[in-house]
Length: 163
Image (cartoon, rainbow, N blue to C red):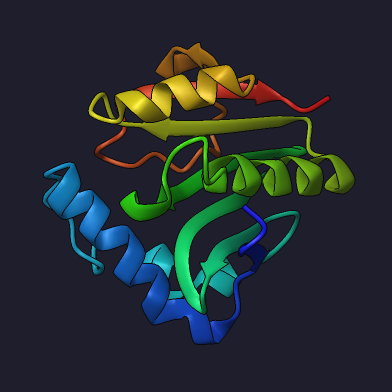
């Protein structure tokens, strides 16, 4: 685990972030989505790194191997978005997802965020278990704040009370 660094996104990371996220979405999960259909990934500083939001990358041997974004949606609430970890460093033994989430939670606490919401697809079963194990509770779509940025592929929703 010590060989993985979690740091904030910089503009130089833009292409590498896409090269992590798109293959996972398209090849692993068969979601027919393009970079153009995710305009937030082209403007990470404006979309995520504003207000109380932030975007982090996990780096191993100089390469980005994981991502997570926190989008400020107002009212001391935020949306967790774009949490992806490459297959080679997935799992408990590497702890990449857990470390990304820990950094996000610490930032949320420091920023005064009270609730974190997320949407995911039914296909990401391992992700569901991960979120539930880390304090997220499944909620109905109708329980989301109006400001939550819905994605067309999202069909399952979670909330985490920041403590």
